Image (cartoon, helix red, strand yellow):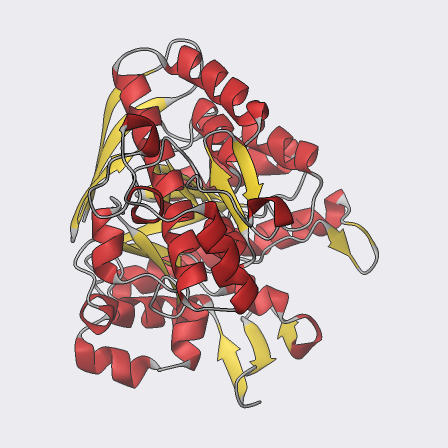
Length: 390
C-alpha cells in the first residue's frame, strides 16, 4: 500500500510538502530517514527514535540476508517485529553493497555472483532474490535491484557507453523486480531507481522508461559514489523534479544538511544517509551554526551544549528546553569531549542522538516553512546560520 498526497508546492523552487501513507503509518514529507543497517540505528534505542520524531527508518537487505538470515526473519514475520519498530521501514535492494564488494563479485545479466564477506560462501543475488528477501523483511518500501553505476571504472571516468550499458541493465532488472514483486503478492510498495551516471541524457532516458513501468514511487540512485560535489549537485538539479509530481521522490544516500535543503529545493521528498550517525561516532557534530569537532582541545572546558538552540537529549536533557531558552539540563561540550577522549560508550550514543535530532528537526523546519509559504526565506537564513560557525 502506498498513497502520496501533495499538500503544497513552493512557487520559488521545486520544493513540495507531502504526506505518504504506508502500511505501517503515515510519513510527512520532506523527510530524512535514519539508516539502520543491521536492524538497528547504531547506538540508539527505538524509543529514542520515536522521541526525536523519526517517522521511517532504513534496513539493509544485503546485510540482513547475511545475518541473521531469511529463516530468522520469517519466524518473526519481518523486520518490524524483529527490531521492535512499529513505524514504516524502507529496505534497499542490496545492489550498492554487492557493487562495493569489488573483486569479490561478478555481475552478469542474470544477477551477481559473489563471495559472502561473512564466511566466504558462494552466493547469488538477482532481482528475484532481492524481491524475495525484501518480501520476507516485510518492509513498507522495497527498492528494485539495480547496478550502481560508479563515477570511475578501472581507473578512468565512466564513459557514456559504460554508463548506458549499466543503466540499460538496471532497467531490465527493474522490470524483473516488478514482475517478481507482483508474483509474490507483496502488499507493500516497490520503487524504481533512476540511473545513468553523470550523463543527463541517460538520466532522462532511464527516468522516462521507468515511468512507463508505473512504479508507485521513484528514487534517484548512483550519486554519492565518489563524484565531486558539483557533479552530484548537477544531477540533483536535473533529475528529481522531472519525476511524476503525484508520486514520492527519493534521493538515495545524500547527504550533508546543505545537500538536504538543496535537494528539497529540487523537488526531493525523501533522503537517507549514514553521515549523521557515522560522523557522530567520529566526533563531528552538526549544529545550526556549522559543524563542530568535539575532539578539538578548545572544547575541554566549554560549559555550553553542542547547540544552544537544540532540544535533543544531549543538548537539553529530558526536559527538552534549549540552552538559549533557559535550559541547563543537557550535557556540556566539555563532558562530551571527555567521553570521546576516554572512549566511553555514552559519548557516541549522545552525539548520535544529537546528529539525528538535528537532521530530523531540520526537516521539520523545512516542512513548517513550506506550509507557511516561506521556504525561500528559510533557505536563505539556513545558509547564513550554517556559514556563521560555532
